[in-house]
Length: 225
Image (cartoon, rainbow, N blue to C red):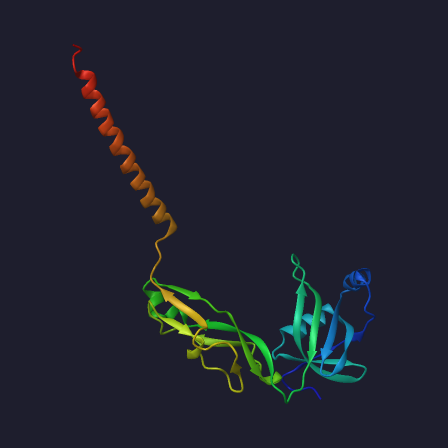
């Protein structure tokens, strides 16, 4: 039975063919994929592109793949996208057991940036680490983890050690070495830098010719002997 946090997706078997057959599938609105892991042989399948897109955008990391009247819990491990259109070209799913933790990657989202005192003073907030490696039960994998930066001042740095992990989630990255966000002093705007450089050049170029002209003028005013 599908877990309440999972989404069901109907797939159909396919013969693993050459690139021509794969292109034909895509023209029909289907996406080729492979289901592997769990001690079973890899299974080549095809799935409706629109249904796949809806399933991947639903909440929860687990997708119940329905095939031949049976449902297999799985998580997305790889997705190849078209470089221009952004459509899905191929997917890999991994079979999982809902009672065993697995490693995954999730997104870090910064919240409260507009309220940060350092940002109000003109400081620059930089989001350094946007994804982290975690371990959790398949149904406990969060879509994202929020990081509150509303109290950051200029010069502050937030590492992963300061981020509270959701219940049942363990960070796999180095807590002290992984920098999530920094708030640095205001940077000189590019146009200001260019303006200063131009002004410096004008002053430098204007001074030298003036002295040369003065020297030259004095030389020309002297009577010839």
